Amino acid sequence: MYKLTYSPASPYVRKVRLAGYLSGLNDQIELLNPDHETHIKMKLNNPLGKIPVLMTPNNQYVFDSRVIIELFNDTSGKLYPSDDNKKIILTNAALTEGLVDASLLYVYSIRYAGDQKPSEVWQKLQLTKIENTIDYLDKNVSKDFNPSKVYISHIGLIVSLDYLNFRKIYDWDMNLASGLNIYLENEENILNGSFEKSLMSTSKFKAQMDGIIDIIIEKVYKSKEVIEKELTGYKVLHFLLKTFTSSVINWRDDKVSAFDELALECIPKEYLNKDTDLYSSLLDVSCFIASLTDGLALEWYKKLS
Picture 1 (cartoon, rainbow, N blue to C red):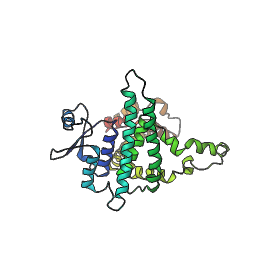
Picture 2 (tube, rainbow, N blue to C red):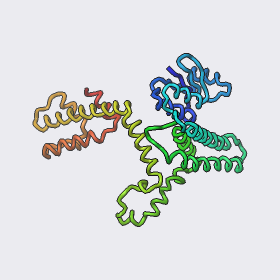
Picture 3 (cartoon, rainbow, N blue to C red):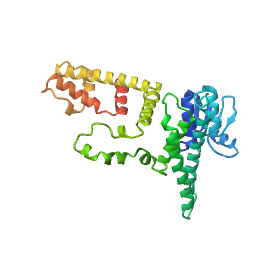
Picture 4 (cartoon, rainbow, N blue to C red):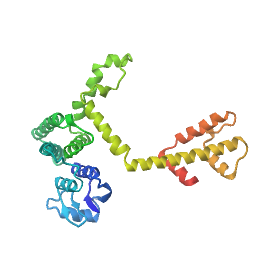
């Protein structure tokens, strides 16, 4: 089992976690929060006192994020290409690393300014680095994006752009996707109802966004964890529908059992009406179940099953 020092806001930790997930090691990595005794001990094993630090199953300490990711790649072989494109991928990955570094330097210029005003010259320097790097990566990383081949450069780009949004440093999404400009260009057709496609389908980044959607479907919506939760959800809904509809049908037929009486007590009175037909009564029960939050539905399931 790997142990990883963890801070949810750290872009370097997030990059390592994504790399671990794509390497198929997600269930083999134990995350240690900053208050964990082992976390403190592991951090001390890095002379720089930085995170992330990874402790391997044989108790070897590995840092920084680039080295940890290379270790994951040694296991999976999925994070770097083996062909002539490797140097290009590594170069772009280094740029995404620099993008995070510039973002952090901008944040630190505010955080550690104390009572002094942050240096505008320093902040402008970092913002220039950020803008130039995003423009370069947009032309050299996103254009050849292939959802089936997600490498370290793509991971780095995702994490760095997410961090820019998180810290509200640079509005890259408006700068790149230009959603507002697309709207303004098509405003007349949108208002008169003749614009019959999504705004982003006209964006020059449609191919990249489609690729991201494909990855989300494959890696998130079709992941084992999500499928297991969906199966549980189907089981819960099937049970609740069967339980409450049976009780309502028995109630309408004056054949209420003791269990039915308890189940009916759980249904708000506005969903119970004998003066309507059976279809309407069953529709009311369905509406009641649909109104439940996930947590409440699960709670009813545990109580009644």
